[in-house]
Image (tube, rainbow, N blue to C red; front, side):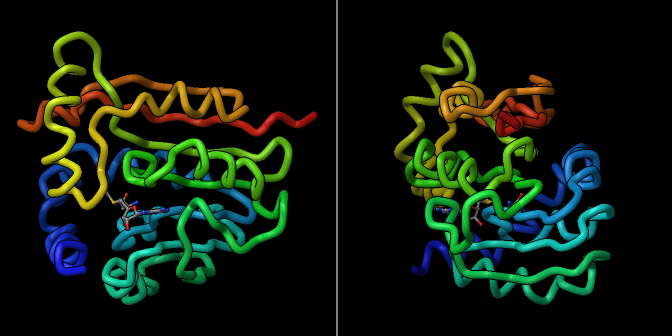
Length: 206
Ligand SMILES: C[S@@+](CC[C@H](N)C(=O)[O-])C[C@H]1O[C@@H](n2cnc3c(N)ncnc32)[C@H](O)[C@@H]1O
């Protein structure tokens, strides 16, 4: 799809200012602690790869061919063994309880069916395993109304991105225990993606 190719082509440049001001540091915090056998869903152009330190093995899954074309050349930036696969979060080619950790950054806004993707993430995580997330989310009051109004245009421009998802509620509804969560406002001019969450949710051990 032309729009998908254009998005992949401009993605790193588009995120550049945010990466420099806050995103790279947040990626490093979140991803640097991902350990054991790790799956990253919607790995995009690979902006997280350089931040892995503790993973024994990383699978970077990405359904878009255009994004994967940007991702694979960044393999050299990753300090842990990495493998790339073509797969969406809603259909992961792994048995139950296969991974210790799943990482999602700016992806749960884009998966077409959020509950289905979270159910699949839950399935492939071992009991007690971690979902480490960094996502922009639904705001409150008039901001949420603006997010709803902008949805069609934003989704078109962002190739499926929803600015108005209550991702924390969806994670909890998916059976995860939210262990750590920070709600914060990203700096910058684009208000509708300002509310963000970062944290760790666990598949219950029992
Ligand atoms: C905004 S980008 C985020 C990329 C990367 N995770 C990051 O932090 O920069 C959203 C990504 O989700 C991917 N995506 C789209 N549908 C998906 C699905 N069903 N499962 C997993 N990822 C998906 C897109 O191809 C894109 O790479």
